[in-house]
Image 1 (cartoon, rainbow, N blue to C red):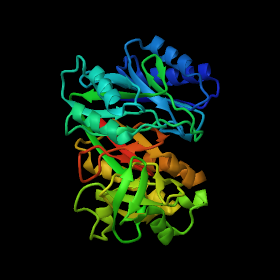
Image 2: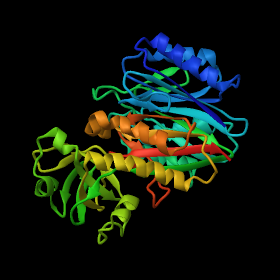
Image 3: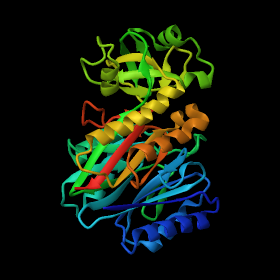
Image 4: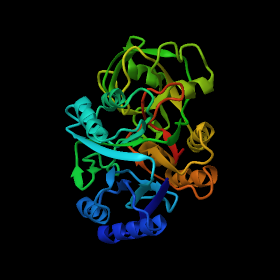
Length: 396
């Protein structure tokens, strides 16, 4: 399998996609790719870009979305750029699909996307990448529907589309069409090796608590008390946005986890991270990643050093778990909140990838409004916040 990356920082859309395609074409050395993933900043002309890609490769199975920042082995971290990933293989098969109306009916849209992608795909599915609309989408329902559709042992990875922190509209791509309320998927099938790494860097600092009332992205009570009261007990401040970024909630979604153990390794393996989005007058907390009722939570915090260390840990986890000798590429999904908290240190994430996944292995990805990856302790797909996801893939 050959994976090539075209990354352009040209602000003119026509010039940028021409540059990205030229880089890819040279790296492909005459091969014709079957699959593609496009990540782009908000101010580009999406239709023009898609038209150029599909004119060059009319049969390309292509998905993608807008971002909160891009990164690749070619350029490192960038904003206002275009990243085009093209994949060629004689043995691995790729199919893309799209489901519209994901905000209103996430399960229906996700199932439609997978059904479209599964048409004429006979080989066993080994990986699903998805980048749904990033504003208003209930991601647990999307992941559950994809999980039911692709099978229990298929890693589902990716992230919610971004719009460079404008919080207005995100865009999704499927072949030559631009969407604003959709869930695109691309399935990898056949002889493929896959491993994943997932780390947030936030560490529990207090006792275990149980969520007693939550609905969607709002946590009303924890231990039958207003959720905001416990937040204030641990962290005090509910006004300073930059201070809030350093704190959050570690969620243990499966019964029996997180209740008695103070083991940091167990917390990393068994929990996902959610950050607050608002503190409401009724004492509830709005959270970016949904937290259900009747799960154990622990309040958590992190420093910039912790965030950077978690990037290295995610990469190491994926490299250790990789079943082949050497991956052909890495796909990366990192949280927009990490980008904000890291500030100028955000470039260290790309540097750590270069230093740790192996010389010459291409990588690319984007900064998301929520990441998708199974927990280390389960193959069940999980929505995350504040997390760095590493997906290694290679032909077996």
